[in-house]
Length: 241
Ligand SMILES: Cc1cc2nc3c(=O)[nH]c(=O)nc-3n(C[C@H](O)[C@H](O)[C@H](O)COP(=O)(O)O)c2cc1C
Image 1 (spheres, rainbow, N blue to C red):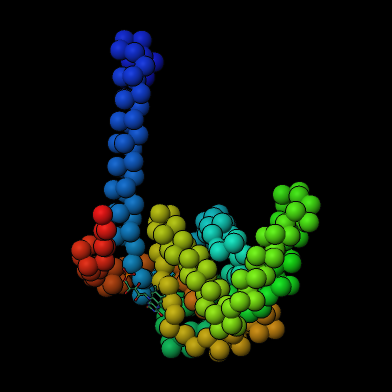
Image 2 (spheres, rainbow, N blue to C red):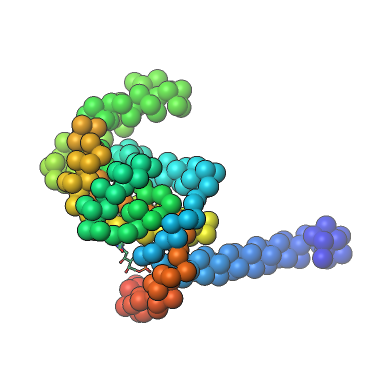
């Protein structure tokens, strides 16, 4: 029934109940879909090397990464798309021969900035000032707070902190790809110092942490039909009332 017709016949209260009910049904369907999508995704072991992600989809994927949240919005990262097949072959060897590196349509190397310091904060403040068109002096409090936090951490703690941010973006990407019907495999199984060397990351002030292979599953990938192993809700959720 049309919502205007309900208002006419039964008044506004019924109409708003009707509206809420529609919203509830839509939300329920959405939740069902997101759970279906998350059951559909899995860490793809064998990609179909012939099936490629389109340029439009790749653009969306990069936008998903760019929009990822980070602590204080500092975005201490760079996402590296490796198209060159010779380089990918070298990375495959550094990844203990995992075939996803060369068979997937795309691989993205997730890297962190190595120097989380006052200079990075300074550059960030200049960027905010330009983007929001605010006087940089108005950001002094924010800047002091960030510098305070950074100087209170050891370089090892800063490295871990930056890694947390990067992994959030990786999680974001895995779910977004699943929603887009794109398969993925998150990969930590690679020699990071070798990959840093292959990509010349040291010179760029970056270090690799995780690789995500993206593309489409091969019909031969047995992992696609193997049971998803997850602990039951009672084991992973604790409700405190
Ligand atoms: C941080 C991280 C690193 C991983 N590294 C690898 C890897 O190097 N190679 C691989 O085949 N799978 C890797 N996986 C995939 C996991 O083994 C997989 O996500 C897990 O077994 C759960 O299965 P599912 O993702 O298929 O549901 C990694 C997953 C995560 C989250």
